[in-house]
View 1 (tube, rainbow, N blue to C red):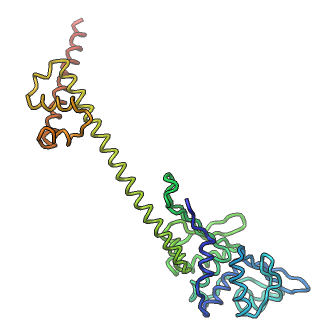
View 2 (cartoon, rainbow, N blue to C red; view 1 turned 180 degrees about the vertical axis):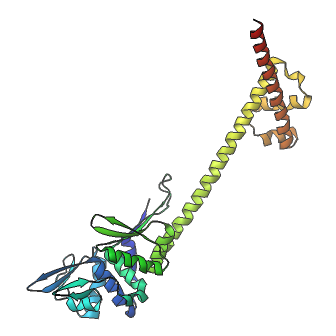
View 3 (cartoon, rainbow, N blue to C red; view 1 turned 90 degrees about the vertical axis):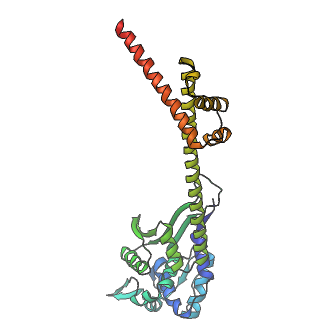
Length: 318
């Protein structure tokens, strides 16, 4: 069972063309979702960015250098930027609070660039898991959609929920350890969120999974229906055979109408044939043959009742 992962989406995001007017929104979303801040005498306010993968780091670094003329202090794992207060102000992430500072939520101006901002946040803290229906596991068959953003601020999680809602993406929120997780678990909202982030290739893969799963369910329903029909047909044939045997043992088949005898002989001689196949062999309609068998079963039930009542009467005489 193959899986579509968050890394697939992030790679698609980093390979897509980024419009100049979207850079600030994307960078703000990325920085706000994965930053860590420390203060020391040598570097002042030191910004750390956990890029998680090399291709995300290679995507973010030139944006920082070309758009904001800021070079990383360290390129070992996380990106580190010294004296970054001005950058954080420009991105709408930082505002003074007395002698210190306060991290903000999503700046209102970025709501107009929701696609870019959400792309940035996904690069910083997003994950995705979708099992593709490739037929390698017939028991599971695919499904299992889960897209999430893992954030350190509940207020930021609430603002992201509102931003996504403006773009017709319905998500839920839960607390996990020290994080606030904004997530979607159904194919429609997962696909809508990916489309918002312009991860079109991933959306097409998910659509293929949905179609494949739907086809598999239809096949399973048809198979279950066929099995149920076969079971009913088999049970009906067994009941007819039992009725014929009962009549033969008690009063003999000669008491039956010749057409019923013909139908009885056909069933006994060909127990594996379906009702339709037997009707074809006898040159009558399927409903006509069923009517004959219903009569045979009715005669057998009458004989059984008479036999039971006779036995009960004998017990009373004693």
